[in-house]
Image: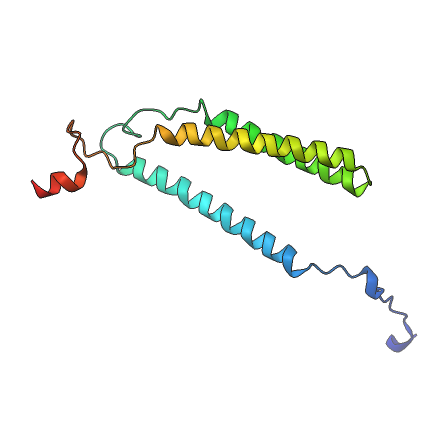
Length: 140
């Protein structure tokens, strides 16, 4: 038998799976966000190795609001997926309930973020007990 006589199975055009531009855009967006997260973690560790005293200077980080926020975000992802599954099956009630719960969880998350950020200082600590801003200390 010659090479020309061997039948080669051809895949049907509909069986070849091609991803849309939107799919690739989401993949690259997630990859970019993951890299940014790694860079932030690296900078935190790097700054800790350069610090002469304890790191972080204020002591260990408080996770009292961060852990509930993480749980809320994960839960809202599942409620959204549940809502999407409902509409794919034609169940509008499941869609509405799922989206309402997801929106409620998102609102709770945003409120907890506001509470957490309200207590954060927005000026660098210069290591002195003066309450003046860094700009005013540079002029004196």
